Length: 280
Ligand SMILES: [Zn+2]
Image (cartoon, rainbow, N blue to C red; front, side, top):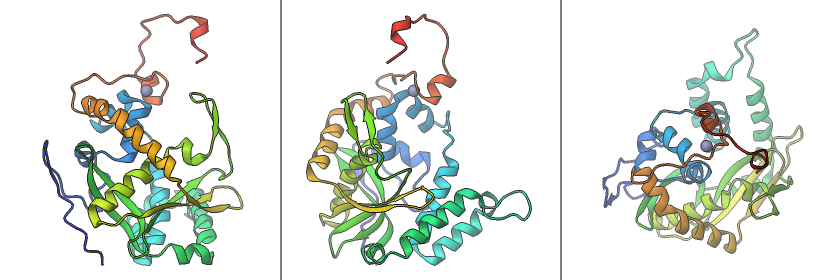
C-alpha cells in the first residue's frame, strides 16, 4: 500500500474535509476543493457551475457517471466491481422482463473486454487504483482521483471513453482542429494530477490516457500528453483561477453563458436580439 499522507490540509480559508472514496464526489467537498471537473464547469458557464455547487441545479449526468464508475470499478478490483454491481443493481438492470443488463452496461462490458484482453494495456495498467490526491495550486486547494498510479515506474493513467478516438473537433475560438483530448481539456486534468501526485508523494509522474471508443467495434489507444500541452494547462489555470475563486466565494457575480442547459432553463425574455447576433 502507498503511504499516502493525510489528505487534510490547512489553508487560508480554514480546515478542509478529509477526502475518501465515500465523499469524494459530494458537493460539500467540491465547495472546499477545486477539481479539474469543476474548473472546466466554471470555464464553460459560471452561473451553471455555481447553481450546481449550491445544489440548485443538477445536470442529468447520473447515468453517464454510473457507466463510468462501472468501468472503473472493473479495473480497480473484482471486489470493487462486485460491490458496485450489488449497490447499483436497480440502475443496472432493465425494469422489463427478463431484467437483463441495460444497453449502456452491455456496451461498457464490450469496452472492458477490449481492454482486459490486451496485453499492452494490462501490463501498463499496474499500480494503485482510484488514488485520491490533494494539494495546492497558487494557494487554492485542489483534489483529484487517479485511476491508476505507478509511483515506482513514475507514471499514471486515466481511463477515458470517447465516441471515436480519431474524431476531429472544430474549435471556433482558435479556429483550429483539435482532438477529443483537447476538446474536453483533458490536458488540464493531467496537469493538475501530475502536480497533486508530486505534492502528495514527492514523485513526478508522466501522464497517459488509456482511451477506448464507444463504437460497435471499440477502438483503443494509449495517449501521451506533450509538455507544451501541460504548460498550456498551467497557463490557463494561472489566468482564470483567481476570478473563478472570486465567483466561488461570492465576491463576483457569476456570469451566464446563455447557451447551456441551465441558462436556457432559467432564461427570461427581457431583451430583444438582432438577427445578426444569434449566429455566434
Ligand atoms: Zn450557461
